[in-house]
Image 1 (tube, rainbow, N blue to C red):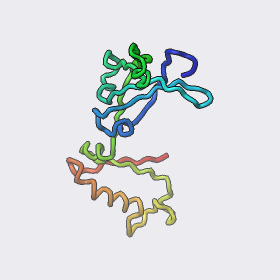
Image 2 (image 1 turned 60 degrees about the vertical axis):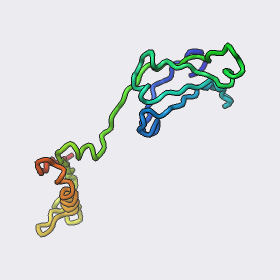
Image 3 (image 1 turned 30 degrees about the vertical axis):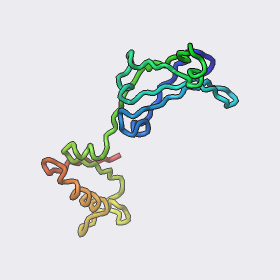
Image 4 (image 1 turned 120 degrees about the vertical axis):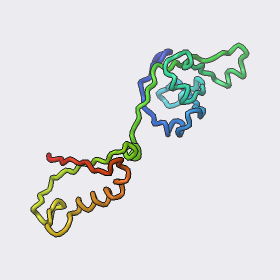
Length: 160
């Protein structure tokens, strides 16, 4: 944020894995710089926190003193170079394939876009053997069937 002593940064997203590798108590070091056009950005200070602290959201717990260690060592009366206040914090969960399996129901969809009467199509309905899609669904289904609580397959056909 340029030309202000009281910047408000834009929202940003960072995966928990990249931030703290899933360790909610791992120390996260935040460094604050004054941006300069020529690339010689000036170090203002730093503070530490953790995912667990950030997850408290906007509160008195998420106001951080930005301290420049060099200034703190040189000046006895130095307190900080300012503060950073967390204005918002939200978590967006992304389900994994394993989460879906743990859900207890197996559901699949097939998009039939090819011509089932043309022998060159993967959708070709050969009266004597299963086509490539049917073989793939059967192979996956046989593995996943045990994860469905009722051992049932639900499916629907997509046709665009």
